[in-house]
Every structure is written in C-alpha cells, then in structure tokens.
Length: 108
Image (cartoon, rainbow, N blue to C red; front, top):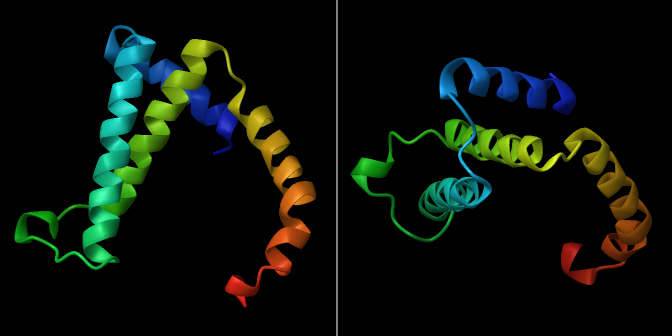
C-alpha cells in the first residue's frame, strides 16, 4: 500500500468506525503516547534497560503501526499529501546528506 492509499484507508476507517477525527491537539497527544510506547520497547528490548515481564508481550510492529496511523490522521486533518511530502524529503536528504554520511568517521 502506498502512502496515498494509506491516507485514504485511514480516512475511510474514521468515517466508518471512528465517527470523526479527534482534534489535532488530541491526535498530537496520541502520537506522543504511541511514540513513547515504541521508545519503551526499544529501550528495554534493544537498549540497556531490562525488559519487564509485562513488556515482553508488547509487539513493536503493532506500536509502529499505531504511530503511522496517527501520523496519517494528522496529515488528513491538516491537508498534507504525505506521499508528496515524503518524496520531497527523500530528495532533500539525498542531496544534503549523501556526502555527509559517507565522510563521517563515526559511521566507518
């Protein structure tokens, strides 16, 4: 599924199941919460913190999908064509960062 179709799928889901979008501030708070859940899994599973028994069942893929869902909601609400914006960002990063990363001694 491309980003444009994902935005449409989220919009259709909201209309069928969600009644309406939460307002932008509520969705921003939800995004922060979802990113925090991703951070908790990463810190405990891949970082130096020990993983609590209650965290071992948490699914990183599901939490990342939650982040994407809320980002798509915010894009829809604010009229952002996320596919177009993402393509533009990749082009910018390619031009700006190609040589920078290859010449970074810390990455060798």
